[in-house]
Length: 324
Image (cartoon, rainbow, N blue to C red; front, side):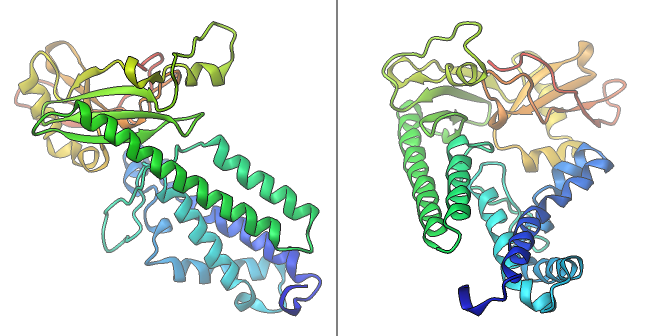
């Protein structure tokens, strides 16, 4: 028994770690106040390293009451802090952005090595948990799984550098490059070359020598994996920031105060349509453009009753078939 722990303390610590690790995502309740509130607050104060000691204390106190731990909150504080820290670390490696310094700063940290749902990442954790349950008297399965997990993220970081190197070959003076991880494989990436007016992007696979063919009936995994092409067959797509026609209206809408929250959030903002007469102008964040996905999240726009009238912010329901 590690450190002379009482026989019933291990199950309590496991339960405490499980619930504490999930606790930061309680910020989903901000979604009840609307999509803008969710966007502004998700991965905010509940994911803050600054507030981690406070959240750990609160979670440990609550779990000690619920689990009736005789040691009180002190017995569960360490595992609660580690679990919350692990949650934050797992979010930081994605490209969504996590406000680790909230409420002191709204800067969003995002290493961008790992897709939000990574089957390999999840698989390593699952195998580690199963092995730890089987060899429950030993710490080695957990330590081995942790080492493999860290090595895998390090491997993904190296692949991101390769993707950026490929994007740099397409870059021109005055442009910026970026790369975002994609599902199924650590070799699947979307690379961007952007300037103040437009983005050019390509869906690539870093090791594939031939395109993967997809036929109806091949399944969901094949559908979302097949769009990523070998480097020598990469197809670059251009998307403007403000629109091809009436770009002045698009620029005005984008720079309106009501879309300040989306300018803060979007990493690869792009124009996504304008209603007749320019009453509504829609924008998306190409960071979330995933081929094969049924819908595009985070679609926001500015609308007004007539030219010169104040802009108002709106969310557009996710549309089908927007991946391109």
